[in-house]
Amino acid sequence: MSMGGQAPATDAAAALLGRLVESGVQHIVLSPGSRSQALALVAAELESRGLVRLHVRIDERVAGFTALGLGRETGVPAAVICTSGTAAANLLPAALEAHHSGVPLLLLTADRPPELRGVGANQTTRQPGMFTACARLEADLPVPDETDADGAADQTAMFRGVADDAYTASLGWGSRPAGPVHLNLPTREPLGGVLPAWLPGRPDDDAPAVASAEPTPPADDADDVSGALYQGGGGIGQADVPVDTDDGPLLLAPGPRTIVIAGADAGADAEQLAHLGSWPLVAEIVSGARFGRNLVHGYRALLRDPELGGRVERAVVFGHPTLSREVVALLSRPDVEVIAVRGPGEPLNLNGTTTAAGAVGVAAGEADRDWLGHWLRASRAASVDLAPPAPDADGLASAEPAARLGAIAAELSAIRAPLDREALVDAVWRATWPHDRLMFGSSRLVRVADAVLGGKKVPVHANRGLAGIDGTVATALGIALASQGGGVPGVTRLLLGDLAFLHDVGALLLPPREDEPRIQVIVGNDGGGTIFDGLEVAAVASADAMDRVLYTPQTVRLEQLATAYGWEYQRVTTRAALDQVLTAPVGGRQLIEVPLPR
Image 1 (cartoon, rainbow, N blue to C red):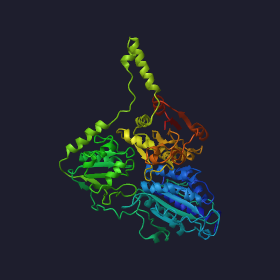
Image 2: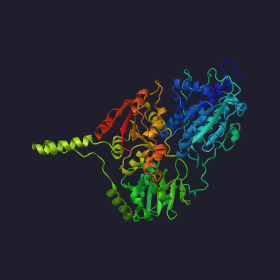
Image 3: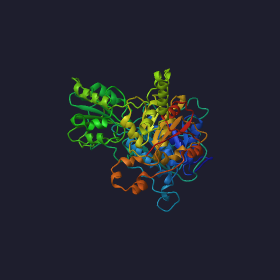
Image 4: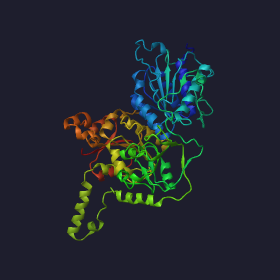
């Protein structure tokens, strides 16, 4: 019951969100709805008190992936709030990506009370269990039924305890990686009331709330939170993978013919191990490890070489490799010892005998310099320089008309040359620096980039947990918002194909009152899904069927989309024009279209 304008739903929302912010949540992403109004109004108040950054998105799928991007960049879960029914279901794609990528994420879904489930009530479905396959922790919470005048009620304490366990579970604990947590929050009317005086960060408070420095693991006994919580299933355990249980790192002898493989989200540790062990480094473009003197260029062909890939005896894997069949084939071989360093996402075990290790190091011993040298010589031969040719300064300055005119003609030809995919990915790679962020969509372009780009230490993101095209623009916007807070310099660039862009076009819509992120969305527009042209299906399908159900041609006018959503638009067709656009100052949201041949 309500007293003095208070409502149980609002007091419960204040206890839950207030404690999440105290625990460390910095961002809340909200989709509007009636059933979630108590959560929404508490979130708005927390924003007004400077305790959290609030991002409003009308599409729940966009909201989920925006929260995913925020979590990818910060390593801290963002909370995403939605109303009941299909709204909650729209969070599933982001939750699955968070599970497979090991990204912390808090899903707060409002719901009708239990007595309305399964009886035909409006906007009501069975939301508990909707995320069981991927949730680190789930709760179908009790309906709040009391108000709290001073913040000391048992119900308030229960919701605060739920927040503690949810926050910690989303970050992972022990052998469990970070991932999504689902809190289902049923309420009865009244759905909203006045905010309680004990909400953190009141204007007259002497000091703001402080985030907890060290979260504690969730209790094994679910009764600690009134029996509301239970651990989610869905691939969290690692029972099928042999695990090195020693407290220290697994020390690897330098002797066996070893390569280090860095997949998505591997990070700099992969490069460091390759350096310490004097081993060749195969680093996907989305790994964050594509740099260093042991980096292997053109690795796909070299892995197919019987004298290189065919002689590998041991592979040490960081992250989640997804971009080449050659790596998958190597890690599936029964004759190769595979050691997978545990990181975000699911454990790797393609050959059935992979050993998982929390950390690895290199034991004392003599490195196999011949093995590394063989790889690096082949790597140098396979590397390519995609930089535009330098102008012929001597020819341009020549007093001889023929020489000068020839140099001018060559320069004009280079300037006017149309862009291809290789030139596009090279231009974006060269324009990006450590203070920037670069995200690749799951399009043909990321494979081109992986095949041709050289080494460079820049922050790279990609949704490679499931390698889908869902939410690519929204994720990049979340990354931009998180990385640019507090006046930090840098630009977020997203490189993707036209179908991936159109799949998430709703993410272009941003509220006018929110921060304007510095972001360049670069669309390689080849009119459809040309990635299918390189798959086996192209050899068996008729041209008509191929176009109709796989290539799926589109003729959308991206300039009109950009104008409608309030984005600056540029269409570039030459390398010189693209370089100029990419290196000019960026003050907000830019959509850059690059037409490409099929």
